[in-house]
Length: 189
Image (cartoon, rainbow, N blue to C red; front, side):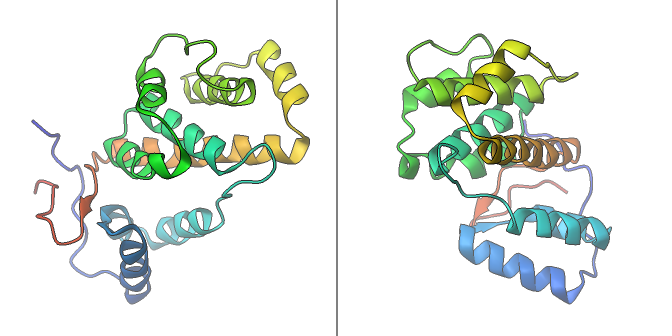
């Protein structure tokens, strides 16, 4: 049985939130409950929206596939249904296999050799930073320094932090998976 949504959207949602939600929903082809819930605190809606718009889509070795893997790993590790669904929905476009998805779902060690070394280390870093408390592993940090330049390291780490923000926020509010536009809303009142 799905968890009951902790907070319902307010009756009155500011026009700018409705408009930005409409644009995001057309882009994702899904009904997005988070912006409407954040309408209770418009400053959080604005800052969260800005963070989302400015997210990196890949650069150098921190390419789009690697960042998608990191987003999926954090979403799975936190257990956020909304984030997991949103981040896995385009996995095939990034050539992420079912076997790789299954390996990331495993809470144990990642399978050696399944991912190229730079992806394996980035996924390990994502798992470590998503743990509570975060794990700071000098051996992983040194390997990250060898595999990525400083800009790529910042892109990877900010991506991990951004998904942690969303996953923990949405998990705390019990936001369910996003429904395709036109489908019956999946959240419970």
